[in-house]
Amino acid sequence: MQANNPLHGIKLEQIVTELQQELGWENLGYLIPINCFKSDPSVKSSLTFLRKTPWARQKVEDLYIERIVDFKKEK
Image (cartoon, rainbow, N blue to C red; front, side, top):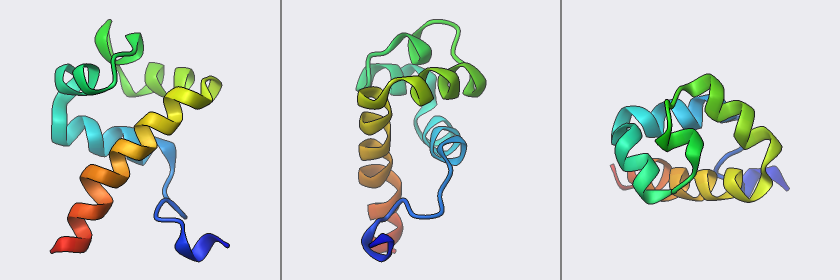
């Protein structure tokens, strides 16, 4: 059931963009040490990597839920 999924209706591009705006590439690369965030990062290159790499995508989605979704619920 999608009703309980906090990521329902949110695209991966939005997730990466919001995390990058909040944290910056350097902090994002520190929190999730993958090359697409550390070496010449861009939203496009990150999306390409994350779509092919389920474990990395899961880490990004988990961070998004922790940093963005939970924060919005607190407001």
